[in-house]
Image (cartoon, rainbow, N blue to C red; front, side, top):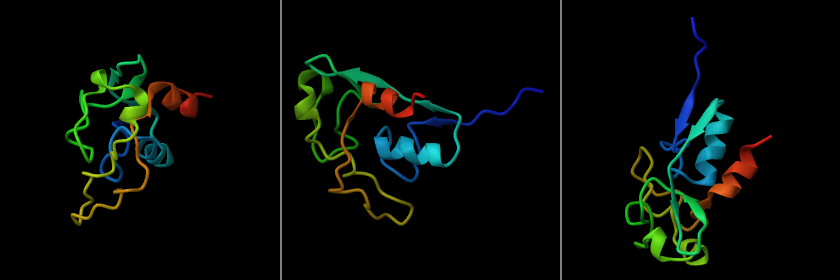
Length: 110
């Protein structure tokens, strides 16, 4: 029998805004074996972690990652749209920003 492996698609997305550092950190706390994500590139060539090609679904406003530089991308509040099981928005205005793939890899690589 093969050993079971627990993958976190978009991190702990039921508890935290998906594809963010807080979501991946929470997934690691829960004991996942691997993280799975999607990426896109900003206008200045930074690879960012996001399922969507823009911030429309998750953020406080819509920006297309490929049309803005990384500094502009980081001005979007990605905690804005997240709602917990009670329908509350606990991550709004808490500094949840788009994550550069490089930071994700640096944070979780031994």
